[in-house]
Amino acid sequence: MTMFGKSSGYEYQCLSQRDAVYSDTPGLFSSHAAFAHNNYDQRGLSFDYVPKVSQNDFTDKSQGLLSWICNLIVTFLVFLVTFITFPISGWFVLKVVPNYERIVVFRLGRIRPPKGPGVVLVLPFIDQWQRVDLRTRAFSVPPCKITTKDGGLVSVGADIQFRIWSPVMSVVALQDLNASTRLTAQNAMMQTMSKKTLREIQTERIKLGEHLGMDMNEMTKPWGLEVDRVELILEGVLREPDGGHAGPIIMPPSVPGLEGLTGPIQQLAMHFLSQTAASQSSQDSVSFTDELRSAAAVSVSRVDGLMDAVRSVLSEQLVHQVRACYRFQITTDSGQNNCYYVDLTQGAGACGVGVSPREPDVSLCMSEQDLLAMFEGGLRPFAAYSSGRLRVQGDLSTAMKLETLIKLLKTT
Image (cartoon, rainbow, N blue to C red):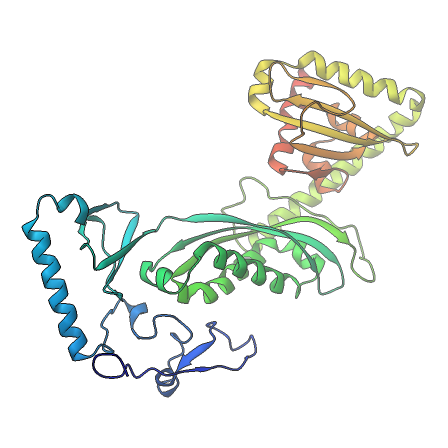
């Protein structure tokens, strides 16, 4: 029974754990009325006392008659005081709401329809209100180690964009909107990726991102959220699958200009580009390897000469175009590891042997032969990355800016 009047008619009981196949709407509690009418859309939500809140119907029939009369009297008195003290009270009760926001109001503890945009009235003492931003938000899921279906171990992250479509549900259903959405996205990503093989994760990232977005929408719909876009990011393969692979694994990066193509068309385009780049890089490696073998005794001097050539083309204009610091971890034919750097962040730039004075933005790991081939124009950075001969630690788009420096070297 309520304090004034009739009972709300909602009694809660614990629900047993159900299989994930049937858990379309997450929740720990459910009302008897929901089971009686086969209505599972609202179970487990904190606004069960307003059964049609998801349909923008805020009629509350759980309030008793005496409670309703008391609320009406208090509201009238506050309106009267606000009117008498106007326009002084106008500075406190009138709120300006832009088009991309809404105000969710609780009057005497009970939810009201959202207000805005424009100038809205919020009564003092009896109204509690909260602004809700309807614009698209974005966050990143940090890379997680996931064991694939075929026994491999990969590090996968994601970039997710979402927006609020129901201000009221986002306020009454969640205490911490950002934390709940991040945890839901991380758990959904790990469950989805663990059911896929390494080959599927590498070649069907766009398709898996679309399916992951639909799965997340099913879970966040009762919260008033909608996931607009999910982009999976494969950081690296930590362990090969059990039994190995029939052929080399190609990890094509996101290709600029193909974002508008969805589904199988984009996958086919990326597969074609990666195969073309791999064949081109293999031809370059054969011709360049022959050249290196004929001059193996002067390989160290050739790298030093390359650094001298890079130093001669450094300029403030190049720094303005790139604005990044690169570290090259080079492996020689004898197995030695050498470190070089190219700093294009300030002044006219700098390059040399050893560790850069500042923290590098991108680290590039490759062989000495591939380094010379790339800077001499025989091997493009995209082809080296697609074929696995170039390993990138950091932002891939920043690493691809090396094309600017390589083109400048060709013209000299």
